[in-house]
Image (cartoon, rainbow, N blue to C red; front, side, top):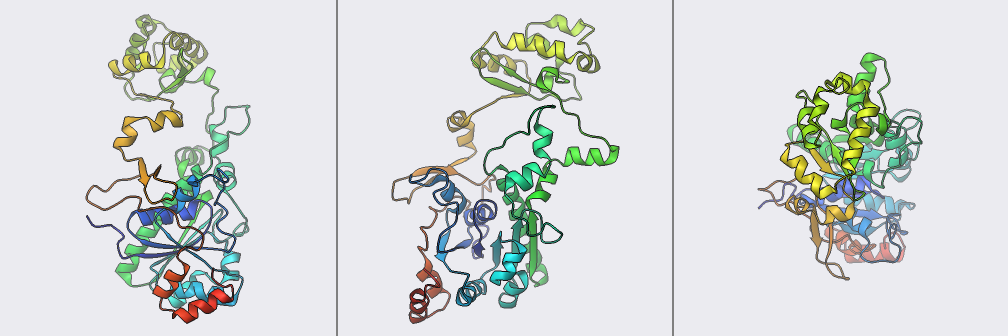
Length: 397
């Protein structure tokens, strides 16, 4: 099979998660990705399990890449990056606009040496405006300022917490989509392209349903405590073994009769408090309490069989151990194996899409710090003596 991005060369000057993750997905798609790190290395290295190999986070975001070390604080280092950029189709960075100017890797700088390249920039708040140079992580620009933390929290409670990388990986998909579209546009027009993706902007897209409705109605999206949820058909319930199930049957068909029968209470259908969606909303506390009591009588496996038999839409609320043992996760190819690590094979997470007729997949481990520096520069056309000189001067390592 053919890799979709075979022949595409990508140069990455980025760290942490969002931008490197997009470049890793391009490597999965067959691109030749070279990652530039400073002498101290990407700050994601050794971040999650210090001293433990394999390093799961770094390999997740940097699998299949080649790695070089360049000191961008020197003029010769900046020239070295441009020498690599001159042979690249895509330049990916998460440096702020000010740092791009400082290190000479703005879109103008890159297009001066690579007039057909795509310059792709990932930031917290975009390339323009008062906050263009504000430093950001997904916890700040995506979840907090992006409104998600507020919307998913129960009224009166503290802002909800999120797991590392959730906003970054969502933004990486936006960056990947925009890069692929820009490559297509470049091929159609022959002109260089600029891609800009901001964590804040992607967050707004993820809550676009609420945000668009709020702008039209000039209202604030409703939030509810679980004990007073407006419908049991879209709520979460705890089973007798302490596990949870999540239901989602928003309509237009009213699944409540089948749900009530499944729970052994067909009489609820004729109870005036629960007979209609409006009545259930008005009596939310009563119906949620009643359903809570029923779910507490059986374990989740029992409820799984009953809910499936009733044809209801539900899912178990799984933890990481559940997902790791879920046969459907393996059918989807969620888990892929990196074979070429010194400590032995280990699992990582594959690309969140499939192309059955294309060669798509994890192609190997992440590079050691500076592992391919000499190889990459010699392939870029520098003579061995020139590479030796850069090494001796500490420009590359």
